[in-house]
Figure 1 (cartoon, each protein chain N blue to C red):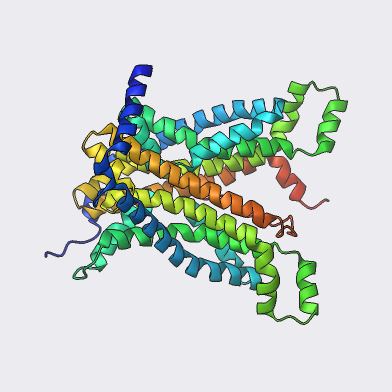
Figure 2: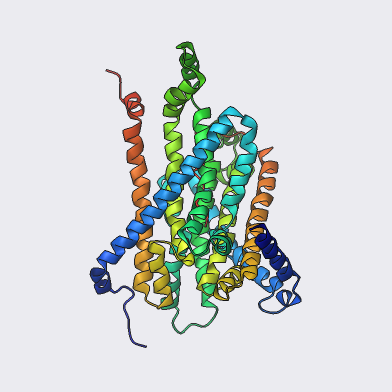
Length: 247
Length: 221
């Protein structure tokens, strides 16, 4: 067993050493950049939608029930099932349109998956700001948007980042699944590894995807720990909702 | 292009048996994964309760497993354990560990000091207190962990269809392979429905398991 494992590890190392895997459409630089572009595009759209919603609900306290529903739906809808539904619908609605449909469908699914953690954590962060601080700021004559910008967002920053962290890790995982539906990214290696019964390729792909997800997770954790130093005065009775499932 | 409806209701009506069988398979995989995951997590939590220093390393390893994208973990296991239920279950179990260990340990930590001291005063042994005081009081937090783990696992089981398992996920795959959206959408919808049912089921189960939390909420007479 150990000999077999060593041989497998050797094969994976050899795969990474093969210059053919570093050039062209199927090369690591291209697949990695496809993966990153997918993730960044999805996160940009998700942030543009989710941050204003979370800040608005947290600041005004209106529509707070929406947050709980979003959190519940986000937890119940699995990424793979969501992509499976989004794909045929995207394709059905875009008959006659040109462009990379796999990319569009993957981004739509990834955005939908990234929204719940960002909305719920942003809401929890803003709602959790100490009421006394908020009243003091109001008493000093600050306007609502000034309170939001000068007090609530800074104090909620660590929790907002936590939401973005959860969404980002999930987005990295979901981009991998996109390859099953014909999309690009590092998931291609896993799909090809299966199809060609090429274990080295399969493992190399799985390894790169895992390392990317762990790097994103650790990067955000480091940033969050730094942010927590100055965004601590939080009420204890408003806990952020549970984390979203892994993709 | 001929107009084909997105959902072929006749197909669903004539394949109810298949849908049921796949749903049962989906539930079976979920129950085994969460069951084994809970057992493992429980043992790990007992280790943490006894040796606190183990908490950091255990959650760090569980956290790394939790972070690895599901397709990567399922795929990585295939050359070792094959396109088998074993591969699926190893991955599914490893995704439950972080949530379960964290909730079991937090639940035990949050037991009120008063209750603990009262138990010690009544002469409970360390183990006796754990089983008859700490764990019952930790039940809500532990069940909350089981709830998240179960709902998560139901979603991940669909992904395991890519390695030949997957219950309702197989329906999703067949639909994609044969360009028959009915199968895909039915499989996805049923797995979401299953997750929602499980989510609600845990809320009801918790109410039944911890009658004292309701008694407290009742106004005094």
